[in-house]
Length: 302
Image (tube, rainbow, N blue to C red; front, top):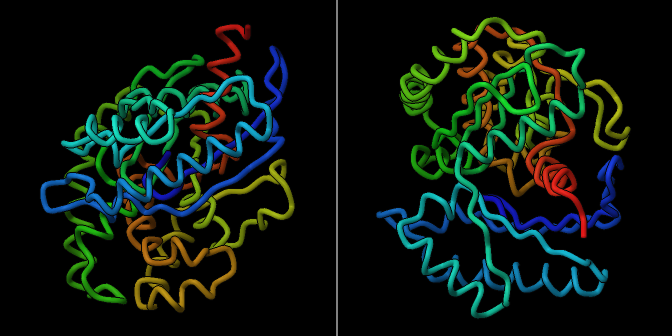
């Protein structure tokens, strides 16, 4: 359960096996937009969450899933009323959401990236932009040396900063400065660990940005090499920041559910790459969900 969607992936999990989805279902939630001024999830958002989790549970039952791993990320994690929300979801659906910490989210995503690229990649530095948060990690093993989570998600920033469509140039520049300041400490520590043998971007936001700068469409499958460059990203920001969300939704690779937040996502991506001195990112098809599945498999299946 992310800040943008509730996503159910059913896999035939087995030791040594690749976690290929047998069924893949998701519904738009935009929970990060259902927060009140204090950051609490609004009753309307709780109702939507209960409905979506209930629907996912019904589908899992129909698929005869032996085990349901239900986890939530930034929007629930950072909400002051998260315990109340989790209790209501469990009361209505019977599903107990496990809330991942930001560091856990970064570590599990890194784990999936390491498995995808293998040991030959050397030091990997990974960036993941969600709806509510940004995860940064680096390491030479299966677990990262350092892992950070910052409240710099594309949906959160759009909700908090942009009040016009398209966003005003002044607001875009103010948001740039804010992102740079929020990144400074974490990125300095990451850079101190040394250069990455491979720099990677995960998440729907990075896949969309790569597609908008010329990467292959998702229809060509997960094994096609995709990448994102800093110059291409800078050119893209200059283009899409002047467009309305409706016009951005007409671009190939941009969904209507995310067109409003792709500018903020692009600003976070550009600032992160610049702060880390990265000119190029490989786009990995595996991310947090695969990290959770792989971690579960590693612990042994009953």
